[in-house]
Image 1: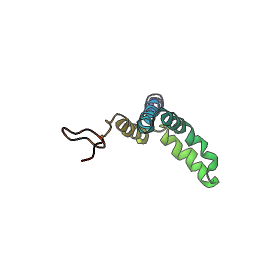
Image 2 (image 1 turned 90 degrees about the horizontal axis):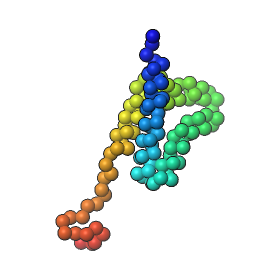
Image 3 (image 1 turned 60 degrees about the vertical axis):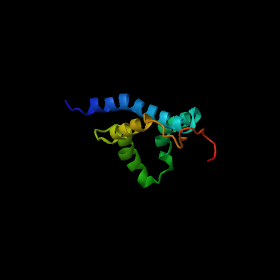
Image 4 (image 1 turned 90 degrees about the vertical axis):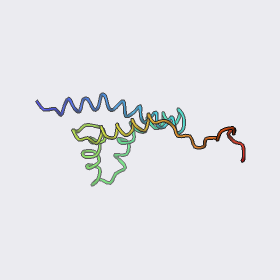
Length: 110
């Protein structure tokens, strides 16, 4: 028995939702819940919605080569690696842009 079908099922059922939650989390951190909902919707719909926009000679390459790899439908490590990077970004602590020094309040000029 080959390992490809269980691997693909695992990637689609486990890593797919994790990737979607990571996109939501990153976008929510950047612009709030509304941006997060839009980003999540585009994450799901955009790869399929752009298919008619391609030139005919490139459409087959997009549909048969890129989409399966990007959606985790192959045994390549592209999709798990992307989910790992997105998870790292989503769980990262926000960076404070400016911290006041001791005895100073934020927003006060020097």
